[in-house]
Structures are given as structure tokens and as C-alpha cells.
Image (tube, rainbow, N blue to C red; front, side):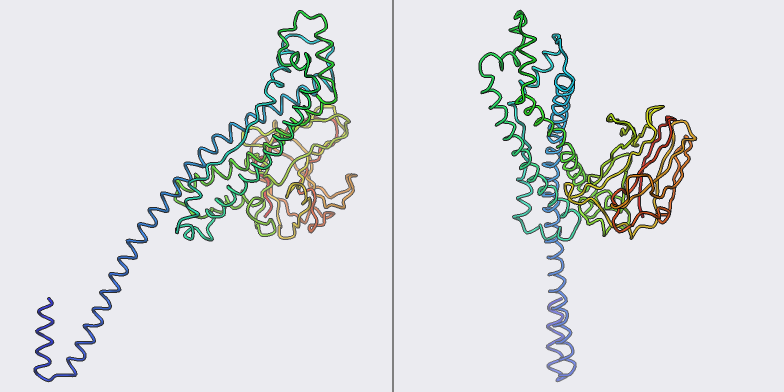
Length: 426
């Protein structure tokens, strides 16, 4: 081929066909340039393929590390929830409403808690793969993607969680040491190794005296913070599981539903066209629920069950009851929201038997707690049904300063149970 072009060039020159030769020369130059460009493009494609392969390897390494973190986070979450519940049980059963006579099982239950107090637990995220990505040339390929946002959020939240754990563990350690110092003779050993003192006639009196000491109460109250940390672990687990899922599916950006589910985590609510108050019976992190009623005692009538929220209004116990959602964003600093962008309220609900009647309500931060707010009547069947309510029907609520985005009002003494699967504003 090269000989052919050389012979052609020589022939054109020998025949003094300069114009044709010039055209030929330009064409040859163009061909050379095209060849170079093709070679560069092929090289770029190869380089891109190599980089994509290496980036994919880094993403999978991070996914493996996060999957391991999630397993450990679930263990810590279970441990803290159990310890917090046990501490709460001791306070309620033996201190707030104290027993005067303890049996073997009582001693054993209380002793178990105090033997665990010096066993602090920590979350230590595996950062090696993430650091490798940050120090590589490939991080820019994730720029402006939801995966980048998710990764940064996961590890930033991990750092905050570590600090929260460190503060709690140190405070607990100081209190526990003070408790040991105060009861350093036989009393601390009595609490933690009660079986050695079962023949002591004064074991009941001594045991209860230590248990009802103010320092003991302070120590156990501190332990309740373990239950309060559960939401933080749940959020970290959710972030981690979402990243693993995106890597498995080869996704870089969230789908529409994920953007809704993470609306309070990644985005300003003012930017969200669809706001979820309830998703498959689960309340997003920036919201909570309270059960207000006409009685004087605490009533826990809200339970998450089978991907639905179950609300029970008890038979012949109250004159009225109103379980309602509250806004609790930015650790309680944000308690109100602007709902002017939303036009409709969508709820998926059913009754236990069918025929359950109640009303929906929405309040702004200045609405008085006297039942004067606008309400919308609802009657349920015993099958799942979707209800669409225009927000304008809640006339008394100023949509710019909503404090109670949704509440369920029961009147009278007739008991009823309702189920809510989803609540959405759009």
C-alpha cells in the first residue's frame, strides 16, 4: 500500500501535474490525521475501559467494606436497644414502682445489667477502600452523582456516630467509676455477684438500698441514651445498604422513589415535590409521632406492624385521642415547615373491621390545642384503600408554618384499630 502511494506521487511529479499532486498531498495529510485521530480515540477507549474497570473494582471494595460495617452496625444496634430496654425496665419495675420483695430472677436480671456496664462498644468503620478511592484519579468520575453524595454522607455520618459513641461511652465510664467508688466495699459486689450473698438475711434490704441510691438512678438513666441512639444506627444502616444495592445494580443515581425516601437526609424539604410522612409503615428520620389523649397516663397505641403503622384507640378509656405526626428535623431545631408547594394529601389506609370513623387534621404552629382546627371526615373499609384529600380543606392551617403535618382524631369511647401504610404530600 505504501509503495502504491509512493509510485503515484512520483508519477504525478514526473508528469508535472502539480495541482493534482497538491490535492493528493492534502488528501494524504488528511488520511494521516484521520489515522492519528482514530488511533488516539482507540487509545482513549482502551484507557477509559481500564479506568472504568479499576473504578468498578474500587466501588466493589467499598461495597464489601460497607456491607461488613452494616453487619456490625446491626449487632451494635441490637445490643444498645436491648441494654436501653433493660435499663428502662429496671427503673420502672424496681425504682419508680419499687418491689419490696425480690426473688432470684430479680437479682439475676439486675445483676446482669451492672456486669455489662464496663463493656463499652464502638463502631469502627473500614475506611481503607474509601481512602483508596479518594486518593485515586477516579473520584472525579463520580462527581455530581448520587453515589458520590451517598458515599460522602455515609462516611460523614460514620464520623458523627463515632463522636456520639465516644461522648456517651466516656460519660458512662465516669459515672460507673463513681458508682464503683461509692459502693467499693461489699455493696458493688453484692449487686454484681448476688449469688454469693443469698444466705445473708439482709440481702433484700442492702440490695434495694443500693438500687434506690441517687447515683444508681443517675447511672441507669444515662443508660437510656442507648435506646435514643437507635435512630442514628438505623440511618447509617440504611445509607450503607443503599450503597451496596447501587453497586450491585450498577447505578450511579437514585431513582424517583429513593429520592423521596431520602428527602430529609440529602435534600432540603423545600426542594421536594413529593413529601413522604410514612413509607411502608415507617416514619422518616425527621418526623415522629405522639399520642395525645384525654387521659392522664401514658398510652402507647402506635405500633409498626407488617409494613404498616397500626394505631389503636382503646375501648371506653378516653373521651378523645389524637395520635399525630410532628416535625423534628435537625435534631429538633426545625419544628415547622412550608407546605405551600403541596396541593394534595394521599393516604393508604384500612380498618381492622371496616366502618371505622375518625377525622384527619393539620395544624400550624399558632393553632390552639382546643380542637378548633379544620378536619376531614374519614370512614374506612377492611381492605386497603387510597384516600386523596386536597390540603386546602384544612382551612385553619397556615400552610407556610405547618407544625403538625397530619393527625388522626378519635372522639367518644368506641374502640377502634386502623392501619396506615403510606402518607404522602404532593
